[in-house]
Amino acid sequence: MVAKQRSTTETIRNIITPLAVVAALGGLSTVEVELPEVTVESQSIELRDRFYDLVTPNQHVVWAVGKSGKIIRSND
Image (cartoon, rainbow, N blue to C red; front, top):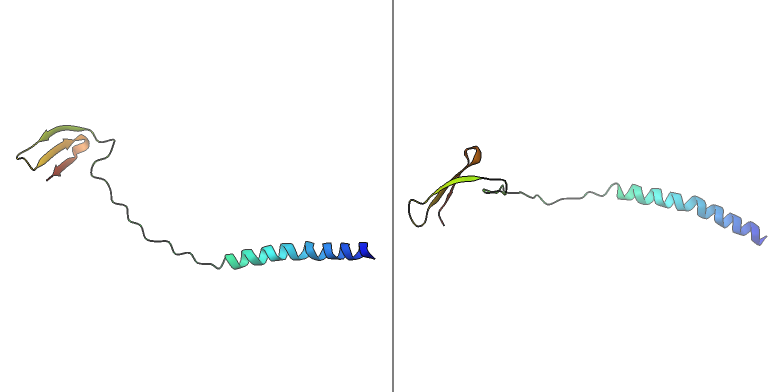
C-alpha cells in the first residue's frame, strides 16, 4: 500500500508541476514593463572623422574642415 501511495503522490506531483509552471508563465506574461526613454545625442567629432585644416580667427574660436564637407566650430 505504501508503494501505491508513492506512485499516487508521484502522479500528483507530475501533474501539478507542469501546471504550476504554466500558471507562473501565464502570470508573468501579463506583466507590463516600462522602459525609461533614453535619448542619445550624436557626437560632433567621431573617431572616423578626418580633418584637413584648422583656422583660428582669434584666441577663443577654432574652425575645422574635414572629410565629406564636415565643418566644426569651437568657442573654447
